[in-house]
Image 1 (spheres, helix red, strand yellow):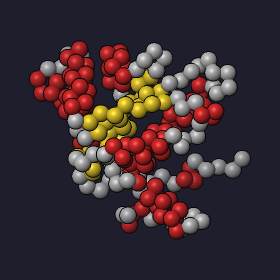
Image 2 (cartoon, helix red, strand yellow):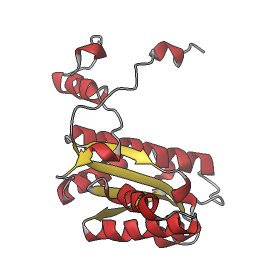
Image 3 (cartoon, rainbow, N blue to C red):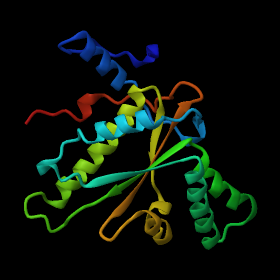
Amino acid sequence: MPASMNIPPLPAATPEGQAAMRLLLTRYSVSAKHLREPGPPDEAIWAMGMAALRAPDHEKRIPFRFVVARGEALERLADLFADYGRRHGKAGADLEREREKAMQAPVVVAVIARIDPRDDVVPAHEQWTTVGGAITNAVNALHFMGYGAKMVAGNRATDPAIVAAYCAAGETLVGWIAAGTMDGPAKPRGEVDPGGILKPF
């Protein structure tokens, strides 16, 4: 753990809990360009999915699913990104960079939301909260298992052709979790005082 973290004593009830908290507080997003093989194997992806299912979920709607790409599947994603680039006027090196964006990380996990706006018990905003919690648990789980990860989205996640490759009717492509082995220590973006978000009622 970097000395600059300056994490104070943590009020965890057990040594295991305190160790887990310290590990959690060292998680940072890692750009796909800094991720390499080996990527998380099937067992790690399974554990990531289990962690995602531990997100707060009113009435257990599970309003999300994941689509995992590695190896040849990343080539198919690269084709989608290249097609996106062509349709947006890119050529040559710029078009090749579109392909590279899809293949930088050894594993890319698409996050797909399944929000039911007609749910009479669980409103849409609660379902979206579960999706966000699932993403958070997923990237934290990858960190706990020793992998770097980052959630990415942007214009490609709303492109109709890319969305159609992933989503059924009523689904939303939220973005992708890029995952792999870090080529160096994760770099914090700077610490923020929790006092800025913790206020008495």
